[in-house]
Length: 178
Length: 178
Image (cartoon, rainbow over all chains, first blue to last red; front, side, top):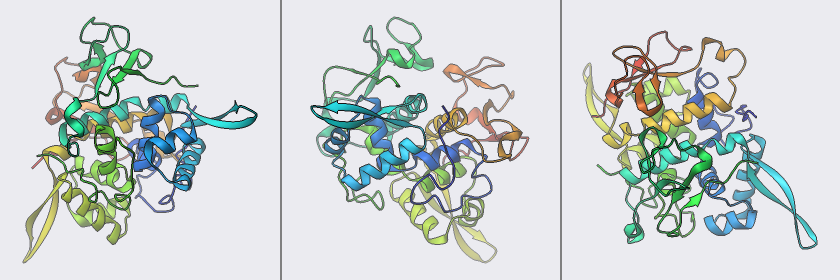
């Protein structure tokens, strides 16, 4: 499934120009869809397994209207898909990654690697240690070339987990796409 | 030099919460600084060698006030640095990548790779062929593990160029940090 980077679907600034390259450049197209702080935070949380409106809201401390607008953009652009589930007697919806959404893991990893190297945690937040990508089955750290630094096998997305020690001592496997 | 992800320096949404992880998570810190479409487009252009206000404005078709605010944020957060130059009799400023700014190349590459796979060019914009990262000295395509697929050597940032065939048949070496 192709994500839709059509002009006009990309949120508050979609009506603005971005030069003659706007449509030709894949970085430009990706930036139109993803160039928003909340969008990136929602996608991080979705990659780590969050699916429900209330879960995103609580984890991000985001206002309902902002969360709604960002989830709608992500569904419209084919990055998340809205699927029904039953909550007791009520029908609700959850938001699951599409293949295009799941494939953002390397963008999020690159952001995290850069943030680890070039930004500082606030106050004491960083004392737990850095974020690390690990091979889910053996726990080895993922090394250059996306191979396991411990057992040496190539680590595909479905075999990767992210260790975020300020949250939990257990690595979190990346959420599979629907 | 560390980029500064302090709350309050990150633009229009800097006053908003992003949950208890806001400061601990490197993806969150990076998203606070970079989660903006114009910021990403300016950084793409800076990585490809643009340095001057007028050049960014013309290439992006961006309004002066928006460009000014984004450049100011990037300077405040240590991603760009403002340096004087003489233009005839006038002193002007240009914007150069810091080490932290230059180190965003892999974030931009990841965005471009994703955009290439999951978004479609508008109209006929894509007929020139995809963006490719190449080894500047031999022209070979950069392969998995960041090695040259042609001559086999590791390709560091200063040896990488981006071929963007809709712009030029010549690959553009990545701009060095100041």
